Length: 36
Image (cartoon, rainbow, N blue to C red; front, side, top):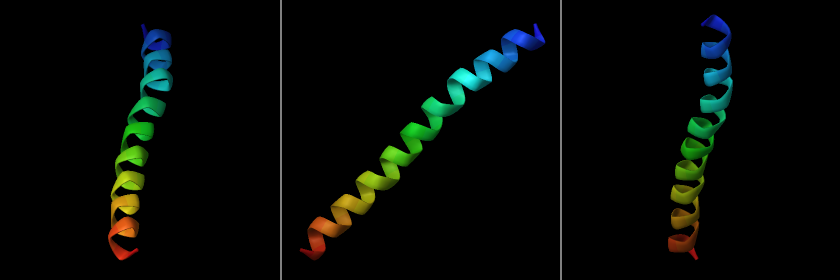
């Protein structure tokens, strides 16, 4: 069970991080476009 949990965390964490990064970068892009 612990191995499966570890594998799930390793698999899910990058997806969550990617979504958060994408949101932050998207907000940055919109701010940059407004300045231009």
